[in-house]
Length: 486
Image (cartoon, rainbow, N blue to C red; front, side):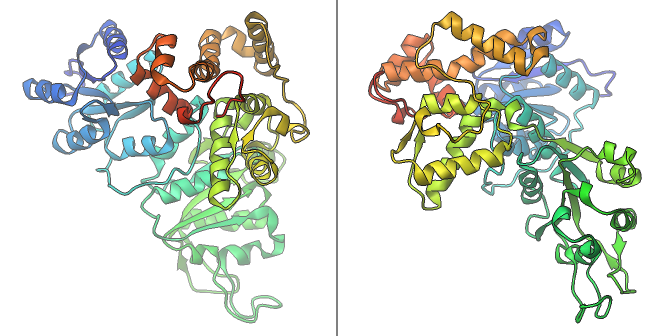
């Protein structure tokens, strides 16, 4: 069947009845024929009765796993395009979705327009999704964050790990550019070969070429023996060129020739060596400005910028701050430092701070608190004097309407355009959900059933939100008068 003949038959596999209904209605309005089911067993019956052209499936299902369903389907029915939905919105999930041959991965909560566009794109491609079957190896989580900004990063990474396209990672210092490079290496086919990093700003300019390409004995004063450069040392693996904007022009010229030809020679050598490495470059500088000022080659920029990844600063992903802070505290404990936890007041202060040093600053602060804080539970008072400025004071008690006004004032200061982009209500609700759930759990001494009843949701939904928000109910305080753990 050609793309012009495809009739738009879509099967939705989603256990949440409300999401199933909304998705079904939206796709029917877009002109598609839609069938929806809530279990893998029901999906198998529908598949036997007549195959859809697009499958939209959740990952967490009551009688199975959507990724496993997608993996089987991509091998037996590659003509069916697959779109993965998941509340487990991590880099690992994005990569696994790509590995099972999914056409698209959309983290929850997703935009209905984005889903409709994905279905249209899948139908236009005729189910030709590509992708390789998933492996069973357990993967460590290389990057932390569930914010929409990080979801965009995850999706780009997931699409490039299986190939050798050159990647240029840009972002402020401390945002985690090397972590992105390591994730691309560790999740890709070169993961069993070396990963080597070289910081262009940390090497004397006259030695950069020898560091990259190696040198022969006698090539320059002090070269008493042959030395392999990073391109040779990383053979078969990944070479991470950090702070590429600080590379001198003569070295840029030689790097360009290597990227064009795939070959290089050592300094002072004549033998041609094949450059069998994947290149990931990174910068915290505006390379286009450096091009205009004559300090960076435009042709090299285009060779490096095949796949651009822009890492957002931490102040633009505040929803990830508490998740990151808990991760760093946990890692500090694994490294032998005392076990510490954040209470709600400390988490609020951290989320309000602007983090000029980004994720690196947050990690350093968490390790300092793990080492020096006297109590296991870290509160706002423990942060006094440790944040260099920019935090918005969080009062112990405040009228709700005043709190909302203060929140709007903060958004207006930090993101003026957000006041008119139609997202204000959803953003406020999203930010208020965590403290609401934590407060209700505290009120009911951690009893999830009573907390769910108070919130007007079922217990399974509450458990799902606790997991998604990183709230640990077993560590909730016994009552509202105690300090709240995180």
